[in-house]
Image 1 (cartoon, one colour):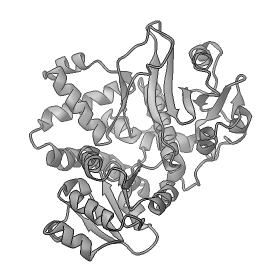
Image 2 (image 1 turned 90 degrees about the vertical axis):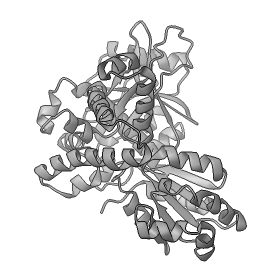
Image 3 (image 1 turned 60 degrees about the vertical axis):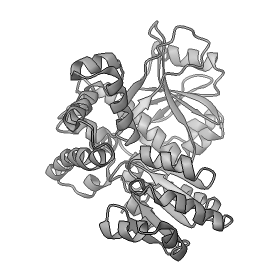
Image 4 (image 1 turned 135 degrees about the vertical axis):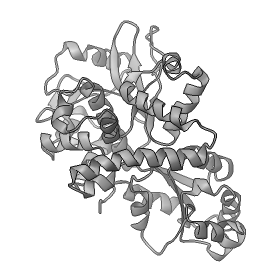
Length: 408
């Protein structure tokens, strides 16, 4: 029911690779995306006992009988398939667009892809609905302009808001999981998020990590909701949970690898020597975060003590979803010095580092942009971005541009 901006990039990957894998958190819309693939495809779900039996009884024979047009859903649950898939691909290497894999838990899928399908597979990540996808708008041109290092004047001109502030605040509060967006029932949306977390813990985590203490892990997720958008101190988290620091690191890696949590390393490629090295992180979906924090509605959210940190994470995820939907790879970092200078987000891609400052308000002061301005100068960045809730984009300096969140 929602057109996904990743579709165009998926079509491109299928033209260039024999196999394509699309990863993403459970219930983000992967099955719907794959159902929109052009041509005839047979889908086999590895959570179905009958499909598993058909595929895994003899994987090589299965792939000989189904040499193309095959979608394997939740492929991380079928490790024996990957060696047979490599053989099938190499049997007709020049043929493109033959197989599609999907997975909702990246650790196992990434491991099997890296070990058996390197060089044979194109990778894509699908996130929950972006702001424009939720309101059924086409993708913004901003991301391709940024990737091309377009002049700041062109960036500012491309960033006209297409939504009003109330729509932005609703998406921020609700998050991007498609199913709650289909229903206008507030009670259903609340219950959906609560049961989603239970399903995540019982099915995904239970299947992948059967020895994990799920009660303590659930406590970790609840604790992370209060730390979302903050610098993490694993030692303090370990003391709070009564577990070891290595256990906390492992559990946070699980949350990141299953797309629930975004691990944000510190930027370390800087002439500045006094850098904070601790990682930062946030829950990837703002709606799930707000349910864990028991925030009842968008109006309450706007004045909540954690509104600023939630907004920062929300906008950062919108940017990452926009780049991913355009097929542009970027790596996210945060920047902070021991003296207190901070840039909320550094996006590093082929175009170089792009520093981003994120504000919930509508106006910015020169003093609040000092760290951003210094980062741009120190790293010779062609552009620094400010994302806020202004009514229009503005030039804030020779290489600084502010863009309304409603234009993302």
